[in-house]
Image 1 (tube, rainbow, N blue to C red):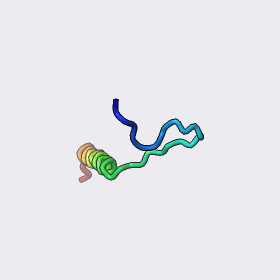
Image 2 (image 1 turned 90 degrees about the horizontal axis):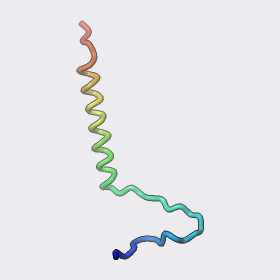
Image 3 (image 1 turned 30 degrees about the vertical axis):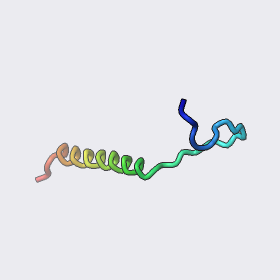
Length: 52
């Protein structure tokens, strides 16, 4: 079996462990948010009627 890493999970003191974001995770989040932003801008630009 694999050895446990990090803190012991069975402390029983009522303190919840908080996960922290790693820089790799933040890069993926920025990429996904940027992709949705580009799709939103393109869809509003192409979907809106041209005012003449």
